[in-house]
Amino acid sequence: MSASERLGFIGLGIMGFPMAENLMKAGYALAVYNRTRSKAEELAGFSPPGFSPPRRGAVVADTPAEVGRQAQVIFLCVGDSAAVLEIAENLLPGIQPGSLVVDCSTISPSVSRQVAGRFRERGVDFLDAPCSGGKAGATNATLTFMVGGAPKVFERAQPYLQAMGKKIFYVGGAGMGSQAKLTQNLIGALTVQAMAEGFVLARKAGLSPSLVLEILQASVARSAMIEVKLPMVLKRSFEPTFHLKWMHKDLGLMLESGRELNVPLPATALVHELFGASVALGHGEEDLAAAITLLETLAGVEVTEP
Image 1 (spheres, rainbow, N blue to C red):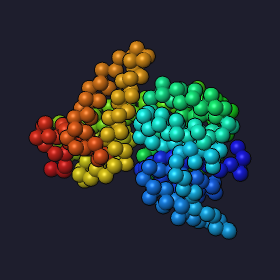
Image 2 (image 1 turned 30 degrees about the vertical axis):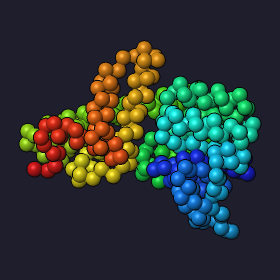
Image 3 (image 1 turned 60 degrees about the vertical axis):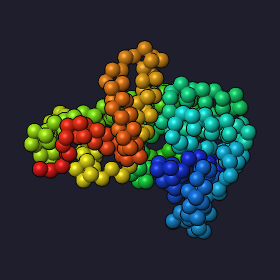
Image 4 (image 1 turned 60 degrees about the horizontal axis):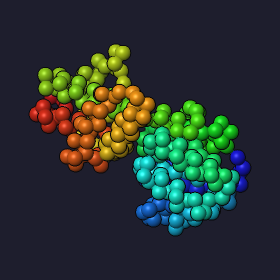
C-alpha cells in the first residue's frame, strides 16, 4: 500500500455512497462512477473535515474505464452478479496492470472466481470482500468485511477496509468472501422468517410482542436480528437499511451454491419462495423486516401492541 495510491469507487447506492465518503474522510483521493451521476457529483462537492489545507472532492468519471485509468485500487459496490460482470468488462479497457479491484457486492462465489480470473489475465489483483452492517454500518464505518483472495493482496487492501469497517475477516481464496457472506445471510433470512412466524402467532394468540421480545432476550433464542427488525415492525416503518428484494436475490444465490456443492437447503428454498411472494406484492423496495407482512395478511393480524 502506498499513501499516494488514488482510490476508485464504482456504485454509490445505499451502502456505496457512505463507504466512499468514509474513504475520503480518511484522507484518500477518490475517483468515482455511478450510473446515476448526481450521486457521484455529491462526492465531488464533498470536502472531508479536519484537513489543512482542505482536501478536494472526488473526481467524477464518465465511465468505469475512466476510473480504471485514474485509480490504482478500485472498489465495487453494486447490486448483483450481472452488474459486477458488466462493470468488470467495462473496467478492463482502462485498468492498469498492478491495480487492485475489491468487490464489496454480494454475488455468486462462482462469479467472484470468474471475475478474479478475468482480472488476473490483465495482471490485476482481485478480492471479493462483501460486507455486513447495513446502512448504519456503512455510515458509521463499522462494517464487517469477509475477504477472499490472495493473502498478500489482502494485506494491501487492509488499510482501506479499516477506513470503512470495524471487523475484517480473511476467509480464504477467491470466492470465499462471497461464500461467507451468503452463509451469514442464509442464517439472517431464516431468522427473519422465524421472527415473522413466531410473532404473528403470538400476536394472534393475544400476547404482547414487546413482552415476547423481552422473554427472547432472556433466553438462548435471543437474536440481534430480531432486536433490530422487530421495532421496525411495531412502528410499521420499513424504510430500508437492507432491501427485501436484495435478500430475495441472495437467497437465490444460496440455492445456486447449494446445487453446485450438492448441499440440500430445503428451508432456504421455502423462504426464497415466501420472500419472492412479498416482493411480488410490492414490498421489495422496503426493508427486509417487511417480509412479515405476507404472513400477517394470511393470518389476518398485524403485529402491533394490543
